[in-house]
Length: 390
Image 1: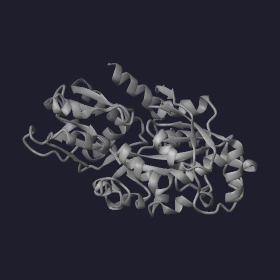
Image 2: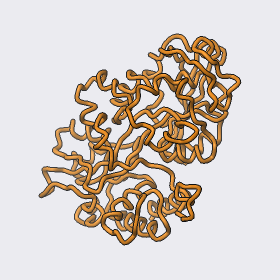
Image 3: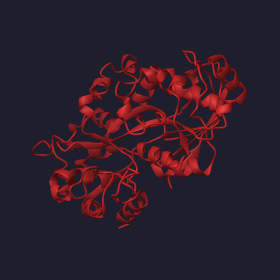
Image 4: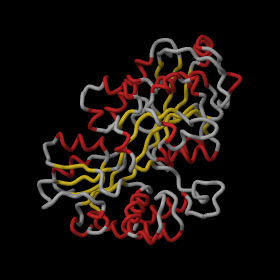
């Protein structure tokens, strides 16, 4: 279970910019949700609070303060640092909403802990990038599950001034880890198994891997074996929320590894000559989504919050703070760095075609009608724990 901490309560202030016309059929508290902007704002003041489960950095005081002076919703945010920790948190306490990674989102949807949203009640949803319905959890028959906030890939990072030639393939890590013994920096998450499976999809076509998140027993064993072989050569494991790769690359204790855009900028600011590339095989990644609880006690405050996090201003701030590409492209006009969105390929959908967003491995292979059987999430976690303890 991931570590968690409870932050201070703040008073959120804000207004929604378009009329909210109908009652949300998907919210677990239908009868308590207003059917108009005026009603929702009035009921939100009566609710007076909002309970959120979050990943780090997703509900800071500086973020919520500009949300405006009209909601009257006092927010308490509780933080979890891993996908499973976030799921455990939501299931152990009552929350109105959650900022979920792809893995956590899939698990929460499967268990019925979150509900699809009525996008007519979230005017800002229409401002998000075209084709958003193709994202996992966004194209369900019941409607999208939440408001996507930002997305990021796992990239291959290396010291250009030390290595004799540029790296373009994940094979540099998976096939020759001994070249960098003790100087590899690797993603500390069960989803590393999926990244290994993605590489094996090309390197070992006889395994017939189609989806690196949905693996049969043979495919899973091969992927775990590849990760286990890597483990003795790793000098540094990092998590998305607890990374300091700049330090290790400056000291040359890391030469090669996996990273994400939020770290690339920090490493480059040190003056160290590094390159971060999306390898030839493609990569895995994630996107964060704000979701509403199936039994939200404060649905009006939560719907105001959903619209708020869809706004360009909020997505611009979160994008620069967290190093992910926003889904509201108007945010690109508001970032302090005018090249921020271009550097993150925010408006280049073709670039994202071979970035496979994380979801939860399922025994039904992600398809309830499938006759195939895959290795479920619990076994992925168990295998990862064993690898990390070895």
